[in-house]
Image 1 (cartoon, rainbow, N blue to C red):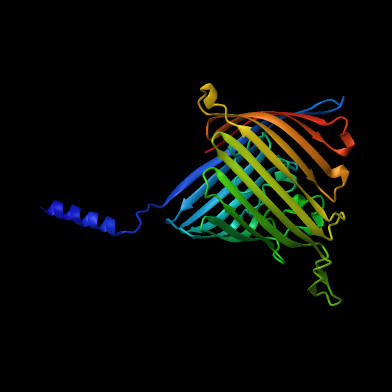
Image 2 (cartoon, rainbow, N blue to C red; image 1 turned 30 degrees about the vertical axis):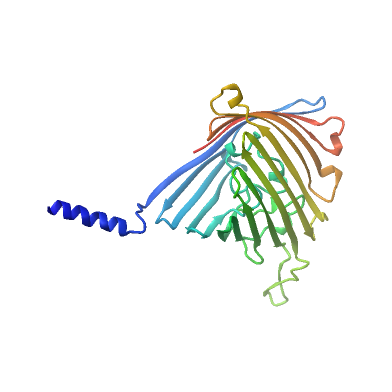
Length: 360
């Protein structure tokens, strides 16, 4: 009888608890191997074989609401004599409830589809879309904090991040990223995003990012040697990025559209705008041929301009490929494409890429 009473008491305690949680660690990661062949006209082709990225995730859950998340990346196998990269891309404390969340540490702004979720099995091509490199500088990360939540099927997020380096902004904002190294917070990047995913397979969203990126003359010394702030309007580079995106992955259809436009004030190269788009269309034929896994033939159309419709930095990309997922976390990819600019309009660059990517 005593054992019965004990079991009843124990069961009552467990039922009375709102949560039954065990703190613990989590580990994951992703990586990708790329083969790249490119050739323009009669020039000797360039051939590369590169284990482009090796990433380890590490996390710890303190409770159901509080956790720590991190991501460390090694690019190109090693770091030596200025080559390769070793970066802390994410490291933040996260609070999450049913409707509200908070992050603080090294975080990612919510810009486009791939910046936050950039694992290789999540996109079709061997390399990330060039739009995601030269319009949205994926992966863009930095020191900062964010709040996020969900209401009536709409997901929203507001993030504040470290300053960009105004002196290095020119053909886009990619080179202005500080990546958390001795970052400043005079103006801070402001990023607000929303997206809707209330329909099966569909995600539609967009974001606005604005910033006055300090330059080397933002802080100056007066005649007494005191540091003062110069006129922010002329001593910083104004940046505003507006982008919209949509992704549909259901009924064997794979479709992605992203469009972004950046406006500048006091760009060091004199550019006032840059931007572009890419469109991916594919169809899973795996089930039609009795194949286990997904097999998607696809096409990509893309254009982007890195400054003021300047033809020398205006690019037209067409790409055709096949991607195979034996399981959802492994992707084998092969593709053929052309990249055209004003300088090679009659002899576009021919690109052949192949690769494998994984995540776990």
